[in-house]
Length: 230
Image 1 (cartoon, rainbow, N blue to C red):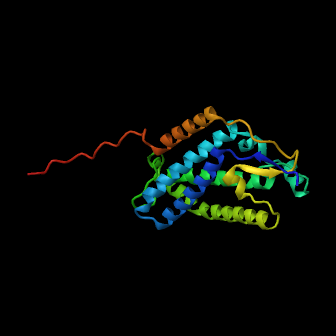
Image 2 (image 1 turned 30 degrees about the horizontal axis):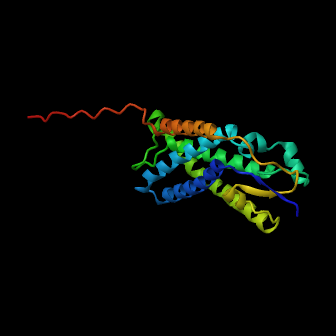
Image 3 (image 1 turned 120 degrees about the vertical axis):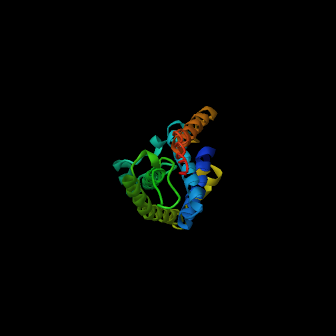
């Protein structure tokens, strides 16, 4: 009764979310397949890097509820939420902890993958910048941290299911439509994050992908061909 509809998630934030879901899933599958699929695994990783970089910039210049400052969890906000005293919109303090944990772990996954190798045919685009021993250690951590990523994703999905079934708060709908119904005075429609901010975030993301791709590295000279002995 007397609820009002506000614009919660802007289009770039929603596109980031669903593209990230697709890319994480395809990266996981291609990594498990291995072999020739590792080439795609590397491409998916670069795409995730671009998305993460975009989200980092968008978290500063984006619209109201996409900005990190609007939902950064503090001990006070987490305590208020646990006491049932939090009345905000967007990511609640516990949800914000999940978001930052996922973003941080994905950033580590991407960074370690850039320098990793599979000892067969795949080497990360920045592999040659470090030694083989360090590359092997990063590869091991890259594989090990997948388990932590799976755990966080399962926890994230469980929280969404809990809110839909128990709290009767559909968190998926606003991430699809951008709109959410709230109580009067609970929040106002998001502002900011216009075309200029979007272009800035996109350009920074593209620059990050180029830097991580290793395309700027000098090409190794071809191996010398020895003349046949007569």
